[in-house]
Picture 1 (cartoon, helix red, strand yellow):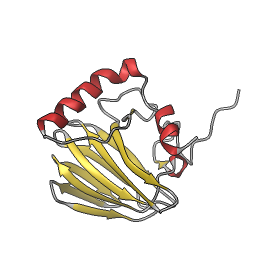
Picture 2: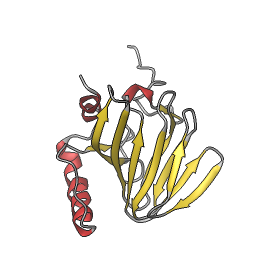
Picture 3: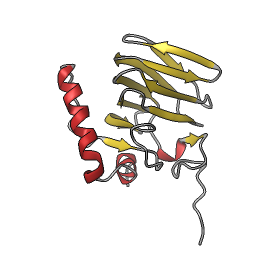
Picture 4: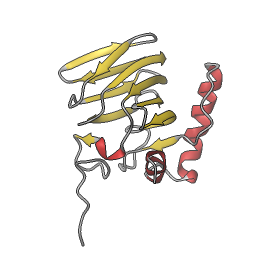
Length: 165
């Protein structure tokens, strides 16, 4: 199973994701932005509160053999991508549209179109939309297991310990 399939496996089911995808596509049309021809990941990180904690990822490329990944990350107004870090992946975020409040380590940054933020391995980070926002992530290849979430209730990633019966 490739990493995009793993991502789709933890994405919201079509019935629950449909209204969010419609709103996402409407916003992209309003911005006159095209999206890659792949299924977006509609993620609530297993918390069941997509409007507050979640995002929509559209993968542009995840070229493990070549050593790079590119994704669009979309958040609605007030929606947060939860605090996490990566052991292997270095990321650079570029704000394409809208604005976010980015938490990176001890820093809180207000970022808007054209702003760039590199995030080193091991650095905790999260971001919240100030209105709808679109970020471009350029990074090392994505590996679902290389997400280490601060919230222990998030049932995915490298630090998740499955419950045993």
